[in-house]
Length: 90
Image (cartoon, rainbow, N blue to C red):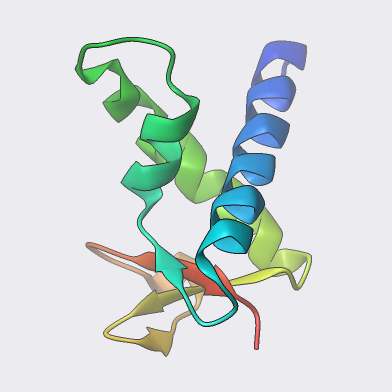
């Protein structure tokens, strides 16, 4: 991973945890919430961050910090297809 990609990944990981902290222990967030929070522009450029956000969430799952959910249930990150939510690990 290049230095810029590592910096972006760490920034996205921090943003995930900060957004979850602001919303409370049982709250979930959408990956697009994270992309929009980090993107510094007024256009739809945040969409390019969607896969990096998912990667950051997968790393946080591995670290035991968060869970990726579909339909309110935790799913294995590699098996998730379609819309997902992120929440603090329980």
